[in-house]
Image (cartoon, rainbow over all chains, first blue to last red; front, top):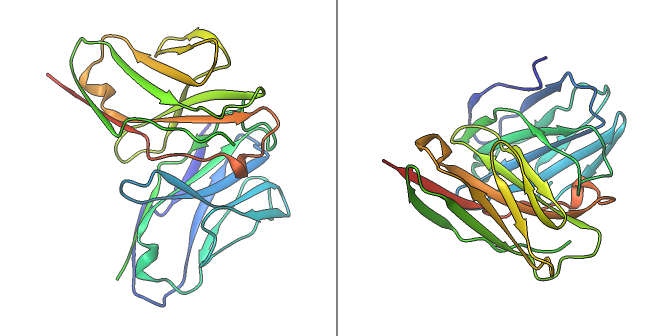
Length: 116
Length: 112
């Protein structure tokens, strides 16, 4: 049982390049999400999904796209990277989508992205 | 959702008890209080959750007074490995994860 797996762990991009951060979970979790973490700012929600085929925007969605074609995978796409997207990205999942108050989020190890 | 306020940082020595207080003055009747721990270069992990009074597990204790406007995470006899950022979150059972907000957390540094 691997939990939440993120790839790559590190990535350097040039401004304007595109890339996809991969996230996979093997816990059959309904809910998946992407956060970014910048120094001193905690975690901010980018996009989330409550099930296959359903996605929604979080607090900071601009510059990012997501899709959820399967229960297991939730990739995050940067279409044209900007230096402001330099950050650490975390994918998280949870069994239930509608019980944030009493549920538990499971996080991946993070992907550190640098945009030059 | 109720906003939370935590100290930015706390320092402690090994073997001491660390108490981190989170203020959530606007907590609603259906809200629960959850704490996460994040080690450097890792994702956060769930450590404890409660609604009222006291909750204890193998890692920590959570004290919630009757008015529920604050809560205190207690880490007994900390070691160097307890150096981490601790996040307090408040949310209702029926809330969507999309509305749950992480604050900046409290950086706890444990020294020998």
